[in-house]
Length: 166
Image (cartoon, helix red, strand yellow):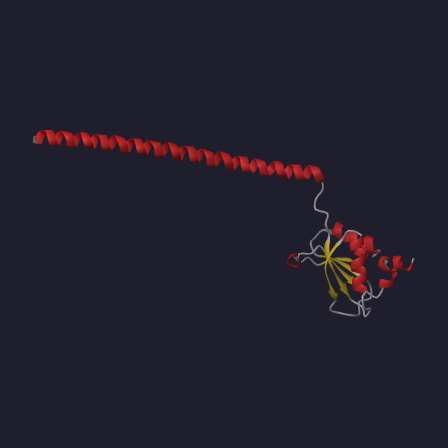
């Protein structure tokens, strides 16, 4: 009897080992499948993102042309910044802030390039009728602006006021 019990116990151990080996093999197959799936999908995601980006570029075929700026009044003329803001917005320029400049004694209107994109500063100067020699660069990425317009005492000579008179 004892030998038969030992034999049965040995068969149970072998059966148990076969079952465990089978479970391990199934888990390895699942891990391999999920690993392959993860890698395959990550490449597809990168490819889809590139396709979406390429499609967006082909639609516009231009860089971001939005100009974001703030208008600062450097004169004693009340409402000058509001008039400039209205005029700039009519010309598709995004004025995100208006206020008073630190000085109220600015002689000539100036355009300050904040982002290092002189083309945007020149466009703002052309829209307002400001001489390009009055464009200066003071890069400041913390402002999240492209351009600052500082209105000077020459505001009556510029387009926002000239077109109002017509």
